[in-house]
Length: 225
Image (cartoon, rainbow, N blue to C red; front, side):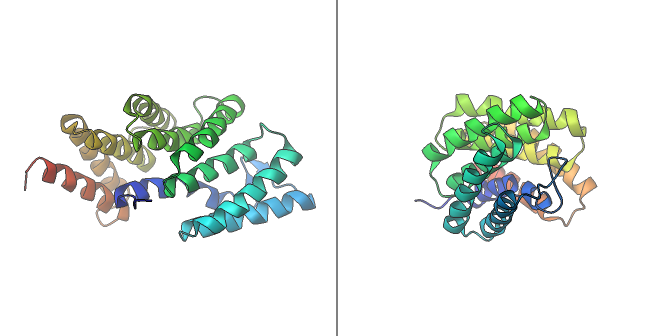
């Protein structure tokens, strides 16, 4: 598989960051189950998250499939924790360039989250972003664009216009436009994302560097050295 550009890897990494704060104590606002079988699932999920963040995708994949099997049997097919596991499996396959395998997992995760959590939930935005990525890297731009736009709209509505997660969604949409040489649409999004991150996170934050890198690539494409 051809390695993914660093900018895309960074975008993918965000999709796996949320579960790290969900593995201790609560999941989706609910107390973690004490049942021994589900405890095994939680442990496997935590291990998978850590492995994925280290780039050990094969090992993470195995644990996630084990987690999914346990959770589907114990919680039912439409539980939010099932959706979370499906989402992260989709992340793994995206990171490996296995887009045809990622798509049905992410689509199923999206349906569950929209149904159970509501169409404006932030976790819906997270899955929209991942599925949009899956479409975008396959040049399925007409399918990807409305998902990126909807993910941005959800975050702006839920978090306000000056939140770092809104800036992240802007950066994703801008990079998507850049992939299609739609520079006039990409540039103002990069600039807005940069302004938010510099104010909220500080000028030396890693996210500021990410946006600056993408903006620099845009200028390079335009010959604006």
